[in-house]
Image 1: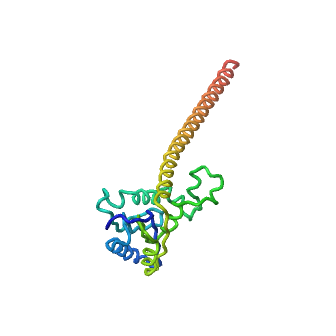
Image 2: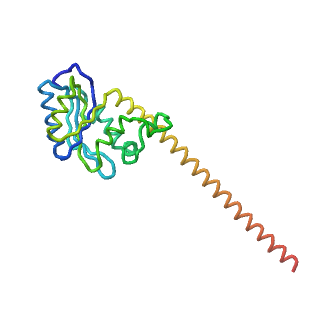
Image 3: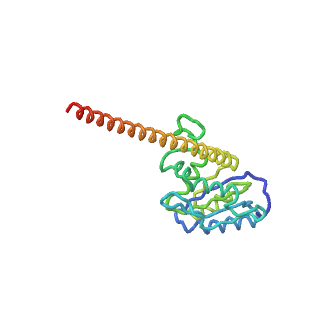
Length: 216
């Protein structure tokens, strides 16, 4: 926020032994930005509940960027990680984003979103941020003082998987609708066949009764 720095644009995810340190870590990032050591684009302290969904506890964003942290790349990331797809790509299930790219053996595929999702652990608080940093040492040192473990991924890689995840979610919805329609159709056809068989049985019974009456 203090001005653009000549460094790579990264998304960082920081997990802590003590969850309360996430809030202090956010303050430290803002101070590093004010000192011109990093360029903080957006950051958020988040909590992942037992159901896998993510709640934003605190956030900050560059005033030059329209909206808050939840309106930029970080907001998209949190939306993915806190949604149904994010729960699937987490390490708890072992399902990786690589499956979205038509990779046959997803267990051998590295996943940017999967790695970040693993850092935001269930029942814990973490710090997510988008930063431009000339050196990773500055943030790593600051987070280490708070017993924070930093995961760092390049913004273009995060953007690429977010785009793929959005496409995959739309495709999954289409497949789900088709499957539901197919099941409803099959159920409808089965019900029709059952009704026809019931009518045939009644007709056969009626014929047998009529025949018996005529014979008497």
